[in-house]
Image 1 (cartoon, rainbow over the protein chains, first blue to last red):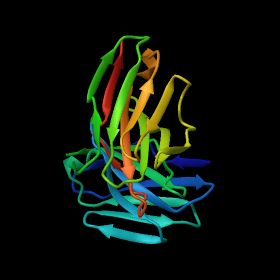
Image 2 (cartoon, chains in turn orange, brown; image 1 turned 30 degrees about the horizontal axis):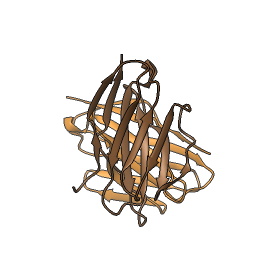
Image 3 (cartoon, one colour; image 1 turned 90 degrees about the horizontal axis):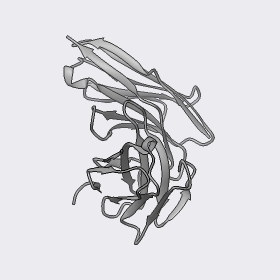
Length: 109
Length: 113
């Protein structure tokens, strides 16, 4: 089976940097996804890490350590529109993906 | 269409009635997923299709829930004898064979009175 852990809520200030952590335990593992979900909307894809290390994509970066079962999503220069839930999801092979409960991020002025 | 579509967008039904939810995946996507999301909660996996077969039905909450997929495309999720606790947003997602990235539809908001 698969188990995904991430904080339920975080608050950060506009313009700052925030790191959202995720740990996973899986019986099989291909890679780690991050999705963004605004209130009342469907999740949208942010990133997918297969190899260890940091991948940067504009203001968002995602890190993976396969040996530690650990990932984080780093958001820089926070904007009010970044207020959303961020879902960590582990790919366990042959297109089976398990989602965490999501971290609700509130960006304050 | 370019994305995943779901219908209806909203459904209000009375307790005990059956409902059928539809999902049209992205053309060519072989994998199709159904999730449920209650207000303020995370995604609850229901069922996953690879082509027309469902290798993983482990998330279906009870035997009142069933799903099928025909022609490797459209899928329907049926809930029989609906209960108030079935009220939630039902999300469908699809992915291609080349990548596990899931693309979500807008969801169907189900309200059972």
